[in-house]
Length: 88
Image 1 (cartoon, rainbow, N blue to C red):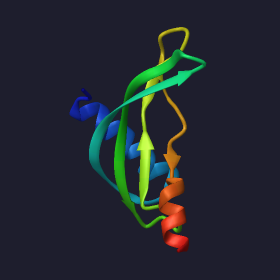
Image 2 (image 1 turned 180 degrees about the horizontal axis):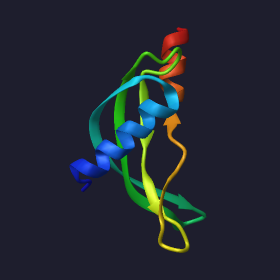
Image 3 (image 1 turned 90 degrees about the horizontal axis):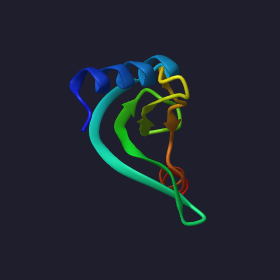
């Protein structure tokens, strides 16, 4: 599971990239499989966000690249379900 410092770094990245406030809600396990093989397995941080014109939720994580340097990946903002829900 993620520690507080890690979650805070992801939170600040979400807030900075999207100019909004973020509140950490959960750490969820994700297991991505393609053609029967694991392509990524890890934990994703879930944030409720306010002040963003379209999204109510953001997701963030980081991983080690090939040189074992921690780098932040793009923060996915907005869930398709959230967008569909807001349109209906």
